[in-house]
Structure formats: C-alpha cells, structure tokens
Image (tube, rainbow, N blue to C red; front, side, top):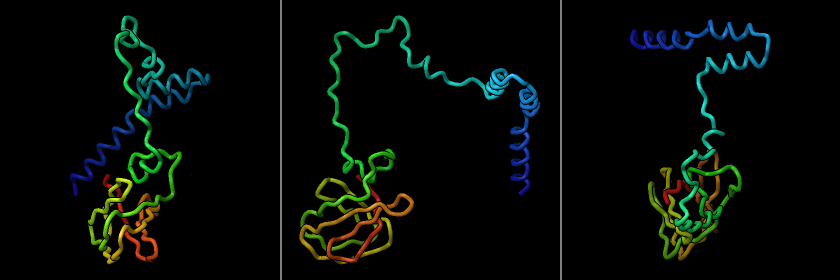
Length: 163
C-alpha cells in the first residue's frame, strides 16, 4: 500500500513540474508569441511537411524499376468483421451459407462460410441445427460484437472473425 502511495506521489510531482513555464506563457499578451511559448514547453513536434518532401540527392523512384502490380482493394464484404476497419463503408450485416451438412455448434466452434470467412463462437452457447448448406446472416451487435443468425431459426450465437 505504501508503495502505491509513493508511486502516485512521484507521478503527480512530475506532472506539475512545469507550472512556472505555463504561468509565464499565460502572461504573454500577443497570441502568436503565447502559442510559440506553449509549443516550446510541449517540446518539438514532428514536421509532416518536411517529411513529405524528398531529400535532395535521392531519386523519387528508380528509373529501371517496374511498378508493382496494384492490388485490388478488399470489398466491404471481405472487410466485414476485421478489427482494423475504417468508419466509412461499414456493412451492417453479411449473408452467406455454410457449405455442406451442418450439425450445430458449441463454445469456440469455428464456422467457415462459403465466402471463405471463418467465424468462431465467442459465447458459451450451443445449438443443434441439422441442415444442408444453411443460409446464415452475421450482423453487427452492441460494442463491436457480431451475432450469427440462421435462416428459419431463432437460434443466435455471438461470434468473432478469425479469418
């Protein structure tokens, strides 16, 4: 307990170490000079404009190098469920089938869809659905989770994408 208190005390003193500099900057009337003062306290910032310009003496591209073949961007259906998703063009649901005879699922079962995606059951649910090539829908749920729904069934399972 004493160790935690000592750590918290040390952390707060370092956070308040530059109050004099902040007070000095706050007293400056000229807004541009005040901003420069605050920037000096914060430390050096990265200059994105300087990084974007090529350095003198380095060629932009090798003249004999062939350009790489441009890969086609993934479709929204291929991106559905991946953790690194962009806010734009998000699907609310996808539909596919489970190829072959499907017998059901249990906790941690991995289900591979006809579109190549693999989804793992992430809750403790289990279900028995005996169907050939069942149609399924995976929907976005609360807090970034996903649910797997079967056509003609009220059974639902929480899933997470593994492939």
